[in-house]
Length: 353
Image 1: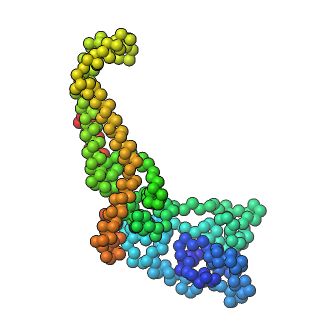
Image 2: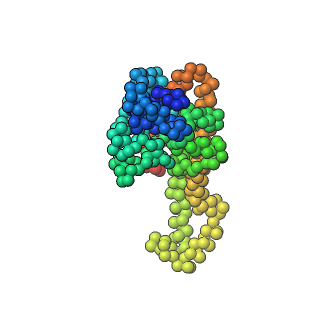
Image 3: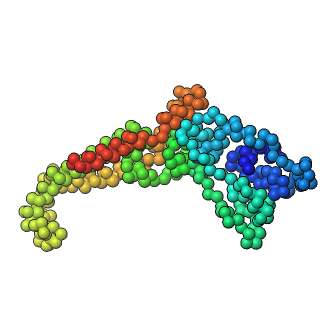
């Protein structure tokens, strides 16, 4: 039974999605777990078996007529909402049936399970009481997917509600929201392996266009320089030095001590420019590694700063809440087309060089 919108008989506060609810095994009256613990029993105990026992209100299903449940996270939203207030899911997309976010002992055949297994006592430490070996075959502790990674949607991150940041980030929010919270509160960062591998392409994918363009350009220049200098300058110079030192192709990996000494003497006699040509490929390679490490280390901080800056800009330019949510959805998220194009350009660059 869906208790959302009903009132707890003790505190008279309406139940909302995600509340910890227990029900009386006799009459089915729902309670907040804390309320039940305070009283210690169903307040309708003396009425059980009579017409005055608890029964569902006649308008039990009316709350669903004025609300709709998010198919991604199960949160209840206003009927005319365009986006989920909890995870930012767009209701204009093709919806899938909402998943059941209730605990196993609160599902639709709960009454049958109670009669069979003797349930009804509030669970201890999150688990229902066991009656010998009579444990329901479908019982298991629920590990529910949280699109905000355990962060409350109203929790501020750099002055912005986490729910708004989730609507802007859209993809992989269970990773980014806890990371952003750790950076904002404790200054603790996490290494971003996606940014480490893709550098500027990842930044452009996350719509950080300025910094992404700079990193992409630097990596492209260093990569191109490494290929061109190695192929057109360093390799021919080494071939001449090997020939002068008497090293043949078959001797590259089995040089004698005399050949090694001769090669080192020849390198020592090179001009400063020629020595730079010899070591430049290694310098270009180390530069690429440095950019990769910098990207992985700074990516999450840069992304958080970009999200906060863009969201504050949208807040300043938007007054209508609906327009605000729409702009978060449109201006946030990922630019998959641009990222795919850059990856193809990278492989094309490798082919050309």
